[in-house]
Image 1 (cartoon, rainbow, N blue to C red):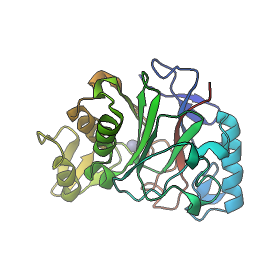
Image 2 (image 1 turned 90 degrees about the vertical axis):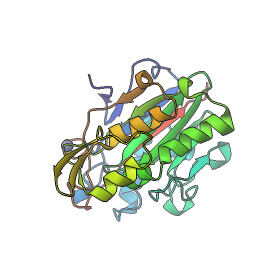
Image 3 (image 1 turned 135 degrees about the vertical axis):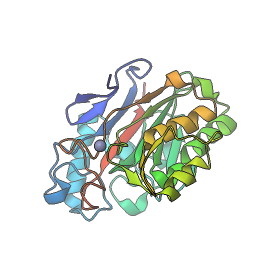
Image 4 (image 1 turned 30 degrees about the vertical axis):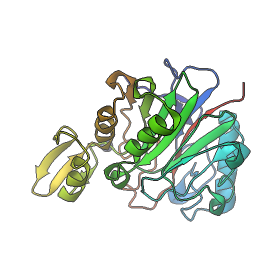
Length: 272
Ligand SMILES: [Zn+2]
């Protein structure tokens, strides 16, 4: 069964433990915005040469839809790396209206404060959401194959465990819409770089098609990596959505040959 359901122009989760009325969590679709041509219509990425005014319009409309104003969004400069940043109230609004004002070059962030919306942008990479119900801590990681191979999810998890004293058994993880193994052909270098991180190298997360040709299930690779550090399998929720297959809902970097917009993943706690 699909974990996400559609509300207005975004996907959200309603099942336990994500049905906390203060928790805002989801993933935007390409619908309902003002952008044209290959950004049609709800491009939320400021860094892809879409009209600045249109993206800001789209972001403001989206902020109304999810009832979380831009002044509370926190954006990072996503560089397919593995650096993590802890977010607090002083970061509120950074990068939400001007790209250059983002928090910095990070691919994952977390906070244990409310009234902050963590947001990251996508067109095939894997959004990984973390939620620790008993601590009201949340996190978001951006994991393409490079970030996955660099261990961005593992780094984030390690930081939550060491710096915040959070136990991995208490963490609930959502793996959101990204390119699926159905549409994601890669070479051996990619498979090997991910397998290097996996304690018991496995072929579970890919299928061999031909010499140097593989179909990669990046969602599953990330799930396996998080389980290695002690996140319980039953606490990892994985979507079935493939960004490349569902052209009615999503932009896809691969399918659209880089001429495309960006969706946004978001997680935050409203002020009680
Ligand atoms: Zn697909």
